[in-house]
Image (cartoon, rainbow, N blue to C red):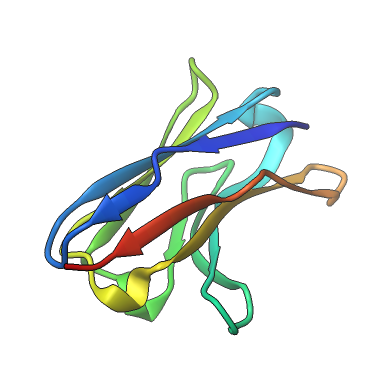
Length: 115
């Protein structure tokens, strides 16, 4: 499984950004797929994920501001981020877990929230 993340960049506080993660395999072959982030000097943490059945899960820090979604035809995962805060600054990674419970990580995309 190959995952290609894109869409990061520099945005002002209060702004919005949408990340994309293109998968080389069908989402039907994955148990879950989601977004993680790692800020400088901090541990990687879950931002949001979505199961094959469509159930979503969000970190408390992003609830109400971020939305995870997927395009099952394009095998692309999205993360819409609104009301961005400086503390959202991090490398954002997509992660997939296959039906065999194997984990795959994509390369990160940097999101910087700063004025």
